[in-house]
Image (cartoon, rainbow, N blue to C red; front, side, top):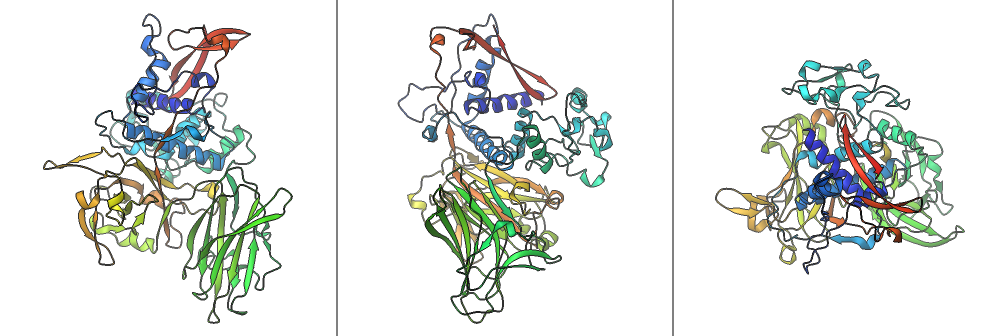
Length: 627
Protein backbone atom coordinates (compact mmCIF):
# COMPACT_ATOMS: atom_id res chain seq x y z
CA UNK A 1 0.00 0.00 0.00
CA UNK A 2 2.97 2.35 0.40
CA UNK A 3 3.30 3.07 -3.37
CA UNK A 4 -0.43 3.81 -3.53
CA UNK A 5 -0.18 6.23 -0.60
CA UNK A 6 2.81 7.93 -2.24
CA UNK A 7 0.84 8.25 -5.48
CA UNK A 8 -2.13 9.73 -3.64
CA UNK A 9 0.08 12.30 -1.92
CA UNK A 10 1.79 13.22 -5.20
CA UNK A 11 -1.60 13.63 -6.89
CA UNK A 12 -2.79 15.83 -4.03
CA UNK A 13 0.37 17.91 -4.40
CA UNK A 14 -0.24 18.24 -8.16
CA UNK A 15 -3.79 19.41 -7.55
CA UNK A 16 -2.67 21.97 -4.97
CA UNK A 17 0.09 23.14 -7.32
CA UNK A 18 -2.09 23.74 -10.38
CA UNK A 19 -4.56 25.58 -8.15
CA UNK A 20 -1.84 27.73 -6.54
CA UNK A 21 -2.27 26.45 -2.99
CA UNK A 22 1.23 24.94 -2.95
CA UNK A 23 4.50 26.94 -2.85
CA UNK A 24 5.03 28.97 -6.06
CA UNK A 25 8.13 26.94 -6.90
CA UNK A 26 6.00 23.81 -7.16
CA UNK A 27 3.31 25.67 -9.09
CA UNK A 28 5.92 26.44 -11.75
CA UNK A 29 6.71 22.76 -12.25
CA UNK A 30 3.43 21.95 -14.01
CA UNK A 31 2.01 23.32 -17.26
CA UNK A 32 -1.33 22.57 -18.93
CA UNK A 33 -1.16 20.43 -22.05
CA UNK A 34 -2.16 22.47 -25.11
CA UNK A 35 -3.66 20.10 -27.64
CA UNK A 36 -3.08 20.58 -31.36
CA UNK A 37 -6.62 19.37 -32.02
CA UNK A 38 -9.28 21.92 -32.85
CA UNK A 39 -11.79 20.73 -30.25
CA UNK A 40 -11.84 23.11 -27.30
CA UNK A 41 -12.35 20.29 -24.82
CA UNK A 42 -9.58 18.13 -26.23
CA UNK A 43 -6.88 17.56 -23.66
CA UNK A 44 -8.63 19.65 -21.01
CA UNK A 45 -7.28 18.85 -17.57
CA UNK A 46 -4.09 17.21 -18.84
CA UNK A 47 -0.60 18.35 -17.91
CA UNK A 48 2.43 18.71 -20.14
CA UNK A 49 5.03 15.97 -19.60
CA UNK A 50 8.42 17.63 -20.20
CA UNK A 51 11.37 16.00 -21.93
CA UNK A 52 14.12 14.92 -19.52
CA UNK A 53 17.71 13.75 -19.65
CA UNK A 54 18.03 10.24 -18.27
CA UNK A 55 21.68 10.86 -17.36
CA UNK A 56 20.62 12.69 -14.18
CA UNK A 57 17.22 12.63 -12.45
CA UNK A 58 15.49 11.49 -15.64
CA UNK A 59 11.93 10.28 -15.33
CA UNK A 60 12.24 10.32 -11.54
CA UNK A 61 12.00 14.12 -11.57
CA UNK A 62 8.77 15.36 -10.01
CA UNK A 63 8.10 17.61 -13.00
CA UNK A 64 8.09 14.50 -15.20
CA UNK A 65 6.61 11.70 -13.09
CA UNK A 66 3.84 13.76 -11.46
CA UNK A 67 2.21 14.90 -14.76
CA UNK A 68 2.44 11.33 -16.07
CA UNK A 69 0.68 10.05 -12.96
CA UNK A 70 -1.98 12.80 -13.16
CA UNK A 71 -2.62 12.21 -16.88
CA UNK A 72 -2.99 8.47 -16.29
CA UNK A 73 -6.03 9.07 -14.10
CA UNK A 74 -9.33 8.29 -15.83
CA UNK A 75 -11.19 11.53 -16.49
CA UNK A 76 -14.00 10.81 -14.05
CA UNK A 77 -11.47 10.17 -11.28
CA UNK A 78 -9.72 13.49 -11.99
CA UNK A 79 -13.08 15.23 -11.71
CA UNK A 80 -13.97 13.34 -8.54
CA UNK A 81 -10.71 14.27 -6.84
CA UNK A 82 -11.17 17.87 -7.94
CA UNK A 83 -14.71 18.06 -6.59
CA UNK A 84 -13.79 16.51 -3.25
CA UNK A 85 -10.78 18.77 -2.78
CA UNK A 86 -12.90 21.85 -3.48
CA UNK A 87 -15.45 20.68 -0.90
CA UNK A 88 -12.66 20.04 1.61
CA UNK A 89 -11.34 23.56 0.97
CA UNK A 90 -14.81 24.92 1.80
CA UNK A 91 -14.80 23.11 5.14
CA UNK A 92 -11.43 24.64 6.02
CA UNK A 93 -12.74 28.09 5.08
CA UNK A 94 -15.85 27.59 7.22
CA UNK A 95 -13.99 26.37 10.31
CA UNK A 96 -10.55 28.03 10.11
CA UNK A 97 -8.76 31.05 8.65
CA UNK A 98 -6.91 28.85 6.12
CA UNK A 99 -7.69 29.74 2.52
CA UNK A 100 -6.79 28.17 -0.81
CA UNK A 101 -6.77 30.67 -3.65
CA UNK A 102 -6.54 29.79 -7.36
CA UNK A 103 -4.16 31.93 -9.37
CA UNK A 104 -6.64 32.75 -12.09
CA UNK A 105 -9.97 34.55 -12.14
CA UNK A 106 -13.37 32.99 -12.64
CA UNK A 107 -12.93 33.19 -16.41
CA UNK A 108 -10.52 30.25 -16.23
CA UNK A 109 -13.31 27.82 -15.29
CA UNK A 110 -14.68 25.54 -17.99
CA UNK A 111 -17.19 22.72 -18.10
CA UNK A 112 -15.67 19.46 -19.27
CA UNK A 113 -17.34 17.09 -21.69
CA UNK A 114 -16.19 13.90 -23.37
CA UNK A 115 -12.41 13.89 -23.68
CA UNK A 116 -12.54 11.89 -26.95
CA UNK A 117 -9.74 9.72 -25.60
CA UNK A 118 -11.33 6.31 -25.93
CA UNK A 119 -13.05 4.24 -23.29
CA UNK A 120 -13.03 5.66 -19.76
CA UNK A 121 -14.46 2.76 -17.80
CA UNK A 122 -13.83 3.56 -14.14
CA UNK A 123 -15.70 3.41 -10.85
CA UNK A 124 -14.89 5.67 -7.92
CA UNK A 125 -14.03 3.40 -5.03
CA UNK A 126 -15.02 4.06 -1.42
CA UNK A 127 -11.55 5.45 -0.64
CA UNK A 128 -11.91 8.02 -3.42
CA UNK A 129 -15.21 9.61 -2.46
CA UNK A 130 -14.76 10.49 1.22
CA UNK A 131 -14.10 14.13 2.01
CA UNK A 132 -12.40 13.12 5.27
CA UNK A 133 -9.56 11.46 3.35
CA UNK A 134 -8.87 14.73 1.54
CA UNK A 135 -9.10 16.71 4.79
CA UNK A 136 -6.68 14.20 6.36
CA UNK A 137 -4.12 14.76 3.61
CA UNK A 138 -4.50 18.54 3.76
CA UNK A 139 -3.81 18.39 7.51
CA UNK A 140 -0.54 16.65 6.68
CA UNK A 141 0.34 19.57 4.41
CA UNK A 142 -0.58 21.96 7.20
CA UNK A 143 1.86 20.23 9.53
CA UNK A 144 -0.22 17.63 11.41
CA UNK A 145 0.91 14.07 12.16
CA UNK A 146 -1.29 11.05 12.91
CA UNK A 147 -3.01 11.32 16.28
CA UNK A 148 -1.82 7.91 17.48
CA UNK A 149 1.78 9.07 16.93
CA UNK A 150 1.60 11.48 19.90
CA UNK A 151 4.13 10.85 22.64
CA UNK A 152 1.30 10.38 25.19
CA UNK A 153 -0.67 7.89 23.10
CA UNK A 154 0.04 4.96 25.46
CA UNK A 155 -2.24 6.60 28.02
CA UNK A 156 -5.15 6.29 25.60
CA UNK A 157 -4.53 3.34 23.27
CA UNK A 158 -2.75 0.01 23.23
CA UNK A 159 -0.89 -0.94 20.05
CA UNK A 160 -1.13 -4.68 19.38
CA UNK A 161 2.23 -5.12 17.72
CA UNK A 162 1.99 -8.81 16.81
CA UNK A 163 -1.12 -8.13 14.67
CA UNK A 164 0.59 -5.49 12.49
CA UNK A 165 1.97 -6.36 9.06
CA UNK A 166 5.73 -6.65 9.44
CA UNK A 167 6.63 -4.00 6.85
CA UNK A 168 4.09 -1.54 8.29
CA UNK A 169 5.28 -1.47 11.90
CA UNK A 170 7.04 1.88 11.39
CA UNK A 171 3.64 3.53 10.85
CA UNK A 172 2.95 3.09 14.57
CA UNK A 173 6.08 4.84 15.80
CA UNK A 174 5.68 7.65 18.31
CA UNK A 175 7.02 11.16 17.80
CA UNK A 176 8.64 13.05 20.63
CA UNK A 177 7.14 16.30 21.85
CA UNK A 178 10.00 18.19 20.20
CA UNK A 179 8.95 16.87 16.78
CA UNK A 180 5.19 16.87 17.28
CA UNK A 181 3.57 19.54 19.42
CA UNK A 182 0.29 18.58 21.06
CA UNK A 183 -0.61 22.30 21.13
CA UNK A 184 -2.08 21.72 24.59
CA UNK A 185 -5.03 19.90 22.98
CA UNK A 186 -6.29 16.65 24.60
CA UNK A 187 -5.93 13.29 22.87
CA UNK A 188 -8.70 12.98 20.29
CA UNK A 189 -10.18 9.58 19.48
CA UNK A 190 -12.44 11.25 16.90
CA UNK A 191 -9.66 13.04 15.01
CA UNK A 192 -9.68 12.64 11.24
CA UNK A 193 -5.93 11.99 11.73
CA UNK A 194 -6.44 8.87 13.89
CA UNK A 195 -5.90 5.40 12.44
CA UNK A 196 -8.77 2.94 12.52
CA UNK A 197 -8.76 -0.03 14.86
CA UNK A 198 -7.66 -2.54 12.19
CA UNK A 199 -5.09 -0.35 10.41
CA UNK A 200 -2.39 -2.46 8.69
CA UNK A 201 -3.75 -5.63 10.29
CA UNK A 202 -2.44 -9.03 9.22
CA UNK A 203 -5.88 -10.65 9.21
CA UNK A 204 -8.36 -7.88 10.04
CA UNK A 205 -7.88 -8.20 13.79
CA UNK A 206 -7.47 -5.09 15.93
CA UNK A 207 -4.09 -3.39 15.81
CA UNK A 208 -5.20 -0.50 18.04
CA UNK A 209 -7.26 -0.95 21.19
CA UNK A 210 -8.70 2.14 22.88
CA UNK A 211 -8.54 2.31 26.66
CA UNK A 212 -12.09 3.68 26.66
CA UNK A 213 -13.89 0.71 25.02
CA UNK A 214 -16.69 2.84 23.54
CA UNK A 215 -14.21 4.28 21.04
CA UNK A 216 -12.88 0.98 19.65
CA UNK A 217 -15.30 1.06 16.72
CA UNK A 218 -15.24 4.85 16.30
CA UNK A 219 -11.55 5.66 15.80
CA UNK A 220 -10.47 6.17 12.22
CA UNK A 221 -13.45 8.29 11.17
CA UNK A 222 -13.14 10.00 7.79
CA UNK A 223 -16.32 12.08 7.95
CA UNK A 224 -14.95 15.55 8.66
CA UNK A 225 -12.53 17.48 10.83
CA UNK A 226 -13.21 17.03 14.53
CA UNK A 227 -13.51 20.02 16.86
CA UNK A 228 -10.02 19.33 18.17
CA UNK A 229 -8.59 19.04 14.65
CA UNK A 230 -9.98 22.50 14.00
CA UNK A 231 -8.69 23.78 17.33
CA UNK A 232 -5.15 22.65 16.50
CA UNK A 233 -5.19 24.26 13.05
CA UNK A 234 -6.51 27.52 14.47
CA UNK A 235 -3.86 27.56 17.19
CA UNK A 236 -1.04 26.67 14.82
CA UNK A 237 -2.00 29.38 12.32
CA UNK A 238 -3.17 31.98 14.87
CA UNK A 239 -6.74 31.99 13.55
CA UNK A 240 -9.10 34.22 15.51
CA UNK A 241 -12.05 33.71 13.17
CA UNK A 242 -13.00 31.58 10.20
CA UNK A 243 -13.34 32.89 6.66
CA UNK A 244 -16.87 32.05 5.54
CA UNK A 245 -18.77 31.76 8.83
CA UNK A 246 -21.12 34.66 9.60
CA UNK A 247 -23.39 33.67 12.49
CA UNK A 248 -24.90 30.86 14.53
CA UNK A 249 -27.64 31.22 17.14
CA UNK A 250 -29.30 28.57 19.29
CA UNK A 251 -31.00 31.25 21.46
CA UNK A 252 -29.61 29.78 24.68
CA UNK A 253 -28.16 33.15 25.78
CA UNK A 254 -30.32 36.09 26.98
CA UNK A 255 -28.93 38.47 24.34
CA UNK A 256 -30.50 36.26 21.58
CA UNK A 257 -27.36 36.71 19.43
CA UNK A 258 -27.84 40.48 19.12
CA UNK A 259 -31.17 40.10 17.34
CA UNK A 260 -33.61 42.97 17.89
CA UNK A 261 -37.36 43.56 17.70
CA UNK A 262 -38.76 46.04 15.20
CA UNK A 263 -40.86 48.95 16.43
CA UNK A 264 -43.32 48.08 13.64
CA UNK A 265 -44.24 44.80 15.37
CA UNK A 266 -47.81 44.40 16.63
CA UNK A 267 -47.10 40.94 18.06
CA UNK A 268 -43.55 40.74 19.42
CA UNK A 269 -41.38 37.66 19.05
CA UNK A 270 -40.75 36.20 22.52
CA UNK A 271 -37.64 34.47 23.85
CA UNK A 272 -39.14 31.54 25.73
CA UNK A 273 -38.06 28.38 27.49
CA UNK A 274 -40.08 25.23 26.90
CA UNK A 275 -39.70 21.54 26.17
CA UNK A 276 -40.26 21.82 22.45
CA UNK A 277 -37.16 23.65 21.19
CA UNK A 278 -35.28 21.73 18.53
CA UNK A 279 -31.84 22.04 20.07
CA UNK A 280 -32.63 20.24 23.33
CA UNK A 281 -35.44 17.98 22.15
CA UNK A 282 -38.64 17.23 24.05
CA UNK A 283 -36.88 15.61 27.02
CA UNK A 284 -35.13 18.81 28.14
CA UNK A 285 -35.93 22.48 28.43
CA UNK A 286 -34.36 24.91 25.99
CA UNK A 287 -34.74 28.36 24.48
CA UNK A 288 -36.08 29.47 21.12
CA UNK A 289 -37.95 32.40 19.55
CA UNK A 290 -41.74 32.27 19.43
CA UNK A 291 -44.38 34.31 17.57
CA UNK A 292 -47.73 33.74 19.32
CA UNK A 293 -50.72 33.77 16.93
CA UNK A 294 -53.29 32.72 19.54
CA UNK A 295 -53.90 36.40 20.33
CA UNK A 296 -54.33 39.57 18.27
CA UNK A 297 -56.04 40.15 14.94
CA UNK A 298 -55.68 38.60 11.50
CA UNK A 299 -52.81 40.29 9.68
CA UNK A 300 -50.93 41.32 12.84
CA UNK A 301 -47.19 41.09 12.29
CA UNK A 302 -43.98 40.77 14.25
CA UNK A 303 -40.42 41.41 13.02
CA UNK A 304 -37.21 39.90 14.42
CA UNK A 305 -34.03 41.40 12.93
CA UNK A 306 -30.50 40.02 13.02
CA UNK A 307 -27.43 42.19 13.36
CA UNK A 308 -25.83 43.60 10.20
CA UNK A 309 -23.41 41.36 8.27
CA UNK A 310 -20.57 42.41 5.97
CA UNK A 311 -20.28 39.92 3.09
CA UNK A 312 -16.94 38.99 1.54
CA UNK A 313 -18.43 36.68 -1.09
CA UNK A 314 -21.36 37.07 -3.46
CA UNK A 315 -23.36 34.13 -2.06
CA UNK A 316 -24.60 33.04 1.35
CA UNK A 317 -26.67 30.23 2.82
CA UNK A 318 -29.22 30.78 5.60
CA UNK A 319 -30.26 27.66 7.48
CA UNK A 320 -32.73 27.42 10.36
CA UNK A 321 -35.35 25.19 11.98
CA UNK A 322 -38.96 26.31 12.27
CA UNK A 323 -42.17 24.93 13.74
CA UNK A 324 -45.74 26.04 12.99
CA UNK A 325 -48.40 24.75 15.36
CA UNK A 326 -50.97 27.55 15.31
CA UNK A 327 -53.02 27.92 12.14
CA UNK A 328 -52.16 26.72 8.65
CA UNK A 329 -52.90 30.27 7.48
CA UNK A 330 -50.09 31.71 9.64
CA UNK A 331 -47.08 32.83 7.61
CA UNK A 332 -43.35 33.05 8.20
CA UNK A 333 -41.68 35.49 5.80
CA UNK A 334 -37.91 35.93 5.51
CA UNK A 335 -36.60 39.29 4.31
CA UNK A 336 -33.13 40.53 3.37
CA UNK A 337 -32.51 44.23 4.00
CA UNK A 338 -29.55 45.74 2.13
CA UNK A 339 -27.67 48.82 3.43
CA UNK A 340 -25.11 51.22 2.03
CA UNK A 341 -21.80 52.09 3.66
CA UNK A 342 -23.36 54.63 6.02
CA UNK A 343 -26.02 52.16 7.16
CA UNK A 344 -28.90 53.55 5.11
CA UNK A 345 -31.35 50.90 3.91
CA UNK A 346 -31.37 50.80 0.13
CA UNK A 347 -33.42 47.67 -0.57
CA UNK A 348 -35.70 45.09 1.07
CA UNK A 349 -36.46 41.75 -0.55
CA UNK A 350 -38.85 39.03 0.58
CA UNK A 351 -36.68 36.01 -0.20
CA UNK A 352 -39.12 33.35 0.99
CA UNK A 353 -42.59 32.77 2.41
CA UNK A 354 -42.81 29.54 4.39
CA UNK A 355 -46.12 27.83 4.95
CA UNK A 356 -45.43 24.19 5.94
CA UNK A 357 -47.21 23.12 9.11
CA UNK A 358 -47.07 20.62 11.92
CA UNK A 359 -43.53 19.73 13.12
CA UNK A 360 -39.96 21.01 13.37
CA UNK A 361 -38.51 21.37 9.88
CA UNK A 362 -35.14 22.39 8.47
CA UNK A 363 -35.04 25.13 5.86
CA UNK A 364 -32.35 26.61 3.58
CA UNK A 365 -32.45 29.92 1.73
CA UNK A 366 -29.80 30.92 -0.83
CA UNK A 367 -28.81 34.60 -0.70
CA UNK A 368 -26.62 36.76 -2.94
CA UNK A 369 -25.91 39.87 -0.87
CA UNK A 370 -22.93 41.97 -1.95
CA UNK A 371 -23.51 44.90 0.44
CA UNK A 372 -24.05 45.04 4.22
CA UNK A 373 -27.27 43.19 5.01
CA UNK A 374 -29.42 41.81 7.78
CA UNK A 375 -32.03 39.05 7.92
CA UNK A 376 -35.57 39.77 9.12
CA UNK A 377 -37.98 37.03 10.26
CA UNK A 378 -41.57 38.23 9.90
CA UNK A 379 -44.45 36.37 11.53
CA UNK A 380 -47.99 37.01 10.25
CA UNK A 381 -51.18 35.92 12.06
CA UNK A 382 -53.41 34.25 9.47
CA UNK A 383 -56.50 33.07 11.35
CA UNK A 384 -58.50 33.53 14.53
CA UNK A 385 -58.54 29.74 15.02
CA UNK A 386 -54.95 29.49 16.23
CA UNK A 387 -53.97 27.96 19.55
CA UNK A 388 -50.21 28.11 18.92
CA UNK A 389 -47.78 30.07 16.79
CA UNK A 390 -44.48 30.02 14.90
CA UNK A 391 -41.10 29.04 16.40
CA UNK A 392 -37.56 29.34 15.03
CA UNK A 393 -34.35 27.85 16.39
CA UNK A 394 -30.72 27.05 15.48
CA UNK A 395 -30.10 29.77 12.89
CA UNK A 396 -26.86 29.46 10.89
CA UNK A 397 -25.56 31.86 8.27
CA UNK A 398 -22.42 31.24 6.20
CA UNK A 399 -20.89 32.30 2.92
CA UNK A 400 -21.27 28.86 1.41
CA UNK A 401 -23.57 27.27 -1.15
CA UNK A 402 -26.85 25.81 0.06
CA UNK A 403 -27.70 22.21 -0.84
CA UNK A 404 -29.86 21.93 -3.93
CA UNK A 405 -32.27 19.39 -2.39
CA UNK A 406 -33.10 17.92 1.02
CA UNK A 407 -34.62 14.61 2.13
CA UNK A 408 -36.27 14.76 5.57
CA UNK A 409 -37.00 11.36 7.14
CA UNK A 410 -39.13 11.25 10.29
CA UNK A 411 -39.51 8.52 12.93
CA UNK A 412 -36.06 7.23 12.03
CA UNK A 413 -35.42 5.46 15.34
CA UNK A 414 -38.38 3.18 14.63
CA UNK A 415 -37.03 2.48 11.13
CA UNK A 416 -33.67 1.47 12.63
CA UNK A 417 -35.36 -0.93 15.04
CA UNK A 418 -37.72 -2.59 12.57
CA UNK A 419 -36.06 -2.54 9.13
CA UNK A 420 -34.55 -5.82 7.88
CA UNK A 421 -31.38 -5.85 5.83
CA UNK A 422 -31.65 -5.97 2.06
CA UNK A 423 -34.40 -4.80 -0.28
CA UNK A 424 -37.19 -5.31 2.25
CA UNK A 425 -35.62 -2.61 4.41
CA UNK A 426 -35.13 0.04 1.74
CA UNK A 427 -36.96 3.36 1.53
CA UNK A 428 -37.17 5.79 -1.39
CA UNK A 429 -36.74 9.55 -1.34
CA UNK A 430 -39.21 11.79 -3.16
CA UNK A 431 -38.55 12.44 -6.84
CA UNK A 432 -36.18 15.38 -7.32
CA UNK A 433 -35.35 17.45 -10.40
CA UNK A 434 -31.97 19.02 -11.02
CA UNK A 435 -31.78 22.59 -12.29
CA UNK A 436 -31.09 21.23 -15.78
CA UNK A 437 -34.10 18.89 -15.72
CA UNK A 438 -32.79 15.43 -14.78
CA UNK A 439 -35.04 13.44 -12.44
CA UNK A 440 -33.30 11.46 -9.71
CA UNK A 441 -33.96 9.63 -6.48
CA UNK A 442 -32.05 8.42 -3.42
CA UNK A 443 -32.61 4.90 -2.11
CA UNK A 444 -31.67 4.15 1.49
CA UNK A 445 -31.21 0.63 2.87
CA UNK A 446 -31.84 1.36 6.56
CA UNK A 447 -30.17 -1.83 7.81
CA UNK A 448 -27.71 -2.23 4.97
CA UNK A 449 -27.58 -4.86 2.27
CA UNK A 450 -27.91 -8.60 2.87
CA UNK A 451 -24.12 -8.96 2.75
CA UNK A 452 -23.31 -5.82 4.79
CA UNK A 453 -25.94 -5.27 7.52
CA UNK A 454 -25.81 -2.79 10.43
CA UNK A 455 -24.98 0.08 8.10
CA UNK A 456 -26.89 2.70 6.19
CA UNK A 457 -26.46 1.93 2.49
CA UNK A 458 -27.18 4.84 0.16
CA UNK A 459 -27.54 4.83 -3.63
CA UNK A 460 -28.27 7.42 -6.32
CA UNK A 461 -30.59 6.58 -9.23
CA UNK A 462 -31.70 8.46 -12.31
CA UNK A 463 -35.43 8.02 -12.90
CA UNK A 464 -37.76 8.82 -15.77
CA UNK A 465 -38.86 12.44 -15.72
CA UNK A 466 -40.86 15.11 -17.49
CA UNK A 467 -37.97 16.59 -19.47
CA UNK A 468 -36.17 13.46 -20.66
CA UNK A 469 -36.87 14.15 -24.35
CA UNK A 470 -34.88 17.39 -24.24
CA UNK A 471 -31.90 16.17 -22.18
CA UNK A 472 -28.51 14.80 -23.17
CA UNK A 473 -28.05 11.05 -22.67
CA UNK A 474 -26.17 9.38 -21.13
CA UNK A 475 -26.21 12.03 -18.42
CA UNK A 476 -22.80 13.73 -18.79
CA UNK A 477 -20.39 14.59 -16.00
CA UNK A 478 -22.60 15.51 -13.07
CA UNK A 479 -21.51 15.23 -9.46
CA UNK A 480 -24.06 14.47 -6.74
CA UNK A 481 -23.03 14.78 -3.10
CA UNK A 482 -25.14 12.98 -0.49
CA UNK A 483 -24.56 14.37 3.00
CA UNK A 484 -26.13 13.00 6.18
CA UNK A 485 -26.28 16.16 8.30
CA UNK A 486 -24.85 16.24 11.80
CA UNK A 487 -27.49 18.33 13.59
CA UNK A 488 -25.18 20.13 16.00
CA UNK A 489 -26.68 23.62 16.53
CA UNK A 490 -23.50 25.37 15.32
CA UNK A 491 -22.51 24.65 11.72
CA UNK A 492 -18.81 25.01 12.61
CA UNK A 493 -18.94 22.01 14.93
CA UNK A 494 -20.71 19.60 12.62
CA UNK A 495 -19.16 16.37 11.39
CA UNK A 496 -21.55 15.38 8.63
CA UNK A 497 -21.09 12.19 6.63
CA UNK A 498 -20.95 12.63 2.87
CA UNK A 499 -20.17 10.79 -0.35
CA UNK A 500 -19.90 12.12 -3.88
CA UNK A 501 -20.87 10.26 -7.04
CA UNK A 502 -19.62 11.18 -10.52
CA UNK A 503 -21.84 10.44 -13.52
CA UNK A 504 -19.40 9.26 -16.17
CA UNK A 505 -21.31 8.94 -19.48
CA UNK A 506 -19.00 6.07 -20.48
CA UNK A 507 -19.55 4.08 -17.28
CA UNK A 508 -20.80 0.87 -18.89
CA UNK A 509 -22.61 -2.10 -17.33
CA UNK A 510 -22.16 -5.52 -18.95
CA UNK A 511 -24.78 -8.06 -17.84
CA UNK A 512 -23.48 -10.79 -20.13
CA UNK A 513 -26.56 -10.50 -22.31
CA UNK A 514 -26.35 -6.79 -23.01
CA UNK A 515 -24.14 -3.77 -22.49
CA UNK A 516 -25.50 -0.34 -21.66
CA UNK A 517 -24.44 2.97 -20.11
CA UNK A 518 -25.22 3.24 -16.40
CA UNK A 519 -26.45 6.84 -16.69
CA UNK A 520 -28.47 6.41 -19.88
CA UNK A 521 -32.11 7.38 -20.17
CA UNK A 522 -34.07 5.44 -17.49
CA UNK A 523 -37.01 4.53 -19.74
CA UNK A 524 -34.44 2.93 -22.05
CA UNK A 525 -32.26 1.00 -19.57
CA UNK A 526 -34.26 1.09 -16.33
CA UNK A 527 -36.79 -1.16 -14.67
CA UNK A 528 -40.42 -0.41 -13.92
CA UNK A 529 -41.30 0.56 -10.35
CA UNK A 530 -44.43 1.86 -8.62
CA UNK A 531 -44.20 4.88 -6.32
CA UNK A 532 -46.10 5.37 -3.04
CA UNK A 533 -48.72 7.36 -4.98
CA UNK A 534 -49.37 4.33 -7.21
CA UNK A 535 -47.84 5.95 -10.30
CA UNK A 536 -45.35 3.81 -12.23
CA UNK A 537 -42.01 5.11 -13.48
CA UNK A 538 -38.64 3.78 -14.62
CA UNK A 539 -35.56 3.67 -12.42
CA UNK A 540 -32.07 3.26 -13.86
CA UNK A 541 -29.00 1.50 -12.53
CA UNK A 542 -27.82 3.14 -9.33
CA UNK A 543 -24.49 3.80 -7.73
CA UNK A 544 -23.53 4.54 -4.17
CA UNK A 545 -22.09 3.05 -1.00
CA UNK A 546 -23.09 -0.14 0.82
CA UNK A 547 -21.10 1.07 3.84
CA UNK A 548 -22.20 4.70 3.87
CA UNK A 549 -22.15 4.84 7.69
CA UNK A 550 -22.32 2.16 10.38
CA UNK A 551 -25.18 2.16 12.87
CA UNK A 552 -22.63 2.54 15.66
CA UNK A 553 -21.08 5.65 14.12
CA UNK A 554 -24.58 6.92 13.34
CA UNK A 555 -25.18 7.18 17.09
CA UNK A 556 -21.84 8.89 17.79
CA UNK A 557 -23.08 12.29 16.60
CA UNK A 558 -26.40 14.15 16.34
CA UNK A 559 -27.39 12.56 13.05
CA UNK A 560 -30.77 11.63 14.56
CA UNK A 561 -32.62 14.26 16.57
CA UNK A 562 -36.18 13.85 17.82
CA UNK A 563 -36.39 10.98 15.33
CA UNK A 564 -35.52 13.30 12.41
CA UNK A 565 -32.79 12.66 9.84
CA UNK A 566 -31.80 15.06 7.06
CA UNK A 567 -29.95 14.10 3.88
CA UNK A 568 -28.63 17.21 2.13
CA UNK A 569 -28.18 16.68 -1.61
CA UNK A 570 -26.13 18.77 -4.00
CA UNK A 571 -26.36 18.29 -7.77
CA UNK A 572 -23.71 20.17 -9.71
CA UNK A 573 -21.79 20.03 -12.95
CA UNK A 574 -18.24 18.73 -12.74
CA UNK A 575 -15.77 21.50 -13.49
CA UNK A 576 -12.05 21.63 -13.81
CA UNK A 577 -9.81 24.60 -14.24
CA UNK A 578 -6.16 25.06 -14.95
CA UNK A 579 -4.71 28.45 -14.27
CA UNK A 580 -2.19 30.50 -16.17
CA UNK A 581 1.29 30.74 -14.75
CA UNK A 582 2.49 33.99 -13.23
CA UNK A 583 4.65 36.19 -15.39
CA UNK A 584 8.21 34.92 -15.80
CA UNK A 585 11.10 37.30 -15.15
CA UNK A 586 12.84 38.51 -18.30
CA UNK A 587 16.07 37.14 -16.82
CA UNK A 588 14.64 33.61 -17.14
CA UNK A 589 13.35 33.88 -20.71
CA UNK A 590 16.53 32.53 -22.33
CA UNK A 591 17.79 30.64 -19.28
CA UNK A 592 17.16 26.90 -19.69
CA UNK A 593 16.90 24.44 -16.80
CA UNK A 594 17.37 20.72 -17.42
CA UNK A 595 15.39 17.83 -15.90
CA UNK A 596 12.32 19.78 -14.92
CA UNK A 597 14.08 22.55 -13.03
CA UNK A 598 12.43 25.93 -12.55
CA UNK A 599 14.19 29.20 -13.27
CA UNK A 600 13.93 31.79 -10.50
CA UNK A 601 15.77 35.03 -9.84
CA UNK A 602 18.03 34.99 -6.77
CA UNK A 603 20.29 37.91 -5.91
CA UNK A 604 19.56 39.42 -9.30
CA UNK A 605 20.65 36.31 -11.23
CA UNK A 606 18.70 33.44 -12.83
CA UNK A 607 19.20 30.09 -11.11
CA UNK A 608 17.58 26.68 -11.49
CA UNK A 609 15.60 25.26 -8.61
CA UNK A 610 14.62 21.61 -8.27
CA UNK A 611 12.09 19.83 -6.11
CA UNK A 612 12.86 16.56 -4.37
CA UNK A 613 10.15 14.47 -2.71
CA UNK A 614 10.77 12.10 0.14
CA UNK A 615 8.45 10.14 2.39
CA UNK A 616 8.87 9.64 6.13
CA UNK A 617 6.20 7.85 8.18
CA UNK A 618 3.64 8.43 5.41
CA UNK A 619 4.12 12.21 5.56
CA UNK A 620 4.96 14.05 2.37
CA UNK A 621 7.71 16.66 2.53
CA UNK A 622 9.11 18.77 -0.26
CA UNK A 623 12.57 20.29 -0.37
CA UNK A 624 13.79 22.93 -2.78
CA UNK A 625 17.49 23.13 -3.57
CA UNK A 626 19.56 25.37 -5.82
CA UNK A 627 21.93 23.94 -8.40
